[in-house]
Image (cartoon, rainbow, N blue to C red; front, side):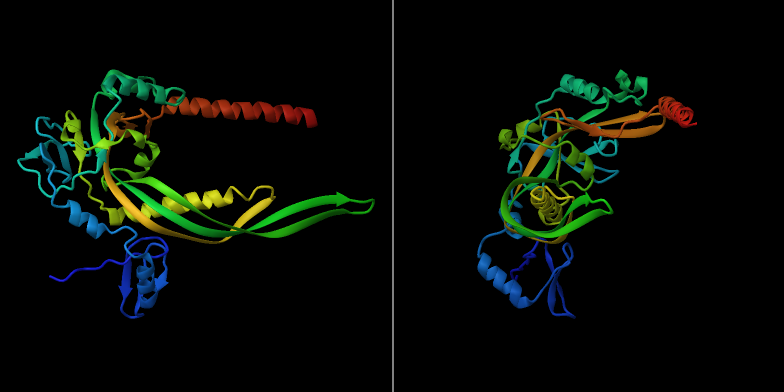
Length: 355
């Protein structure tokens, strides 16, 4: 069987697609196009550097995680991995009963894992602290039966490392006002601001689960990666572990976007002292991209209130909580009418003052 080759976009690192009509390679992520000679030149300059998911799969796809079993949810199809002695009850995604598969096959062994640090008592305290100050939250939402359905899940994450080189141009303005006996003057000066630099990024996280809400996972960051340890099945005891269903190639554009946003913010932070600043152009390229597959601890909490289901997540290492919470309509209208009343009082006072 012939060997397959996967080309990466020199600008953002996403996979390239060959366009037969134009005889060019196209990147669907950053909409760049490249001649074949440009790609060959980039490969010659890059050598063995950069991310190659094909090599990663070749190195790890045949490994089995000893001492584990997998559970297949018959409702949503999620494949959950746990240790051999843990009894499965419900799927953390759809709450349906999950069925035990006798053998675990085709699972890529994680490079590392961050063990759970927050226990159930600490979890309850974290949720209560999260709800403090939420004035519109119904009073009985935190009653015991609202948070008893809790599932600890090791969520699959890809951690990307890369080097970023970039330059950006901005238009900055400064405004000066003055007057004489006859006129008032305004002078607006325009400046071209060029910024260039490079940054190294380590462990940019992207969750590898299609079923998991990306915004929810982004919100419970950061994790302390100094506490990562080599994966051992024993860490799964009492928990579930989701197997990734979005591979590194699929997750790379999200990591690329996060890196480019960080570089842009860094450049923008240097354009102080102007009345206004507008970006004109941007060119940020990534190289030396590498990836590791890890499992990170997350508590998923599902509760029903007034016939609606609410899901929020807790960082199983730090206790950070995020998610959507219900609100009391009575409290909402009370606050709304209170604000309207205050505005009415202020308006009446002003009317009386100017009347």
